[in-house]
Length: 292
Image (tube, rainbow, N blue to C red):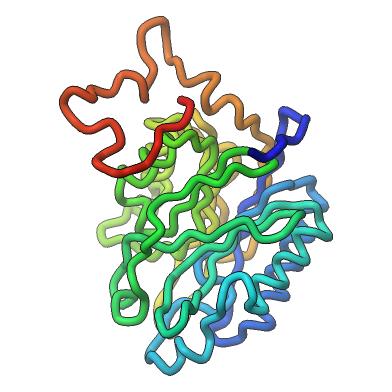
C-alpha cells in the first residue's frame, strides 16, 4: 500500500488543451508546458484530455497503427513519466495505446516514482468502434501517494455503474480524460450535459472528479471544452472552463472528505443505504469492496 502524503489539502488540475491530429511530438510538448503551468500553481495531480498525444478523429487503421504507442515504453508515456518526476506530480493522460496489433483508447497513470498503471475505455463512442477494442481491464482503482484514484474516459461517464464501481472499491477521486462533443438539443444558456453528468456522479457517490476536455475542431468534429473539477458534494470546485480556449483549472481539495463526509445526516449514507438484498453488492463483478 502506498504511503500517503502528509498534507490533508491537495491541489488538483484539469488541463484543457487543443491537440493537433497526428502531431504527437508537439502535442506532448504542449501538454508538458501546461503541466508545468499547473505545477507552478501548486498542483500535485493533473489530468490531460482523451487521446491528447495523437488527436481523436482517426480515418484509417493505417493512421492508428502509425500513431499508437506501447505503454509504458512509448515516447509519450516516457515524456509524462519524466515530467511527473521533475514536477513531483501525478499525471493522468489520455493516450492511443498499442498492445501488439490491438489498439485501445486508454489513459496512463504516472507519478514521481514512475509508471503506476493504465485504464482502457470500456464504452466506445461512435466510430471509435472501428479502430479500438473495448477496454478489458474493468474499472481499476490505483492506491497512490495522493489517494485512491479511479479513471473513466468520456462516454464512460454516461454509465452510472462506472463511477459506482470505483466508489465501492474505495476510490476518492476519479480522473476523466475526455473529448466531449456537442449534444443534440443542448440549450446554450445551460451547462453542458457532460457537466451535469459528472456533477451528479460526484454527488451520488461522494467522489471528487477531475474532468479534462479538449477544445477546437478536428477534421470537422467540434469539441466543447468546459472542463471542470467537481467536489464530493457534486458542486464544481473549479470551472467549468471556456468552450474554446486552452486553460489550466486548479482547485484545492481534501480527498478524505469523499469518505469522511459521506454521511448526509444521522440516517443516510449513500453507499451503505444500497439495497443489496435487491441487487448484487458489486453489480455482479468480482471486485473486492474497499472501505466506504
